[in-house]
Image 1 (cartoon, rainbow, N blue to C red):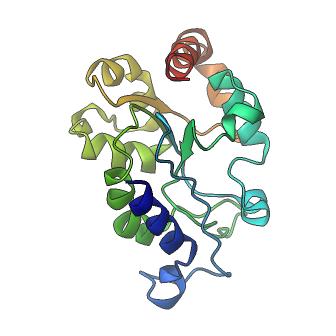
Image 2: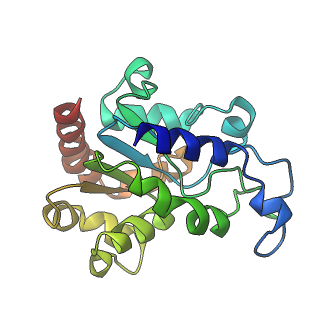
Length: 209
């Protein structure tokens, strides 16, 4: 499994599909895939796609979103970036570019269709998935047979987090909003997230570390 994963990791690092054979408009810059699969990690962080800072650093969650996510999980940077303990595989492996309003474009479809099923196959030890945002929730709940628990909106899906968590033995799935500071208003409108979900998430993370 380690050899298979290493080979897959090298192939991902060299990936240029979104420039050479894109589905739609090509990626507007040089690809820089940022994915940290692991042969030993029991926890998988499945985000949306790298932002501008991560594209520059080549290291996942090196931005304020990462600070908030680590706070939710109750982890410091040393543990968070220990690739033997946490795998980080966003739905879009490269920064997708910006839309006309300056926001991030959606994750590239090529990433999910080309890489994700293969990555999940070589990481069978993962037994906790943090599905961050709609694309990650659609993919992971769908492949685990939990698509019926997705709501019409992210709020409905995250609001059903207990049902999602109870529906699986392994891997367990936490459905989360994006930790972007743009979602601070959402968090204020839904105090149950910090009061109920975050403590449960920290317990689940701690148990696997």
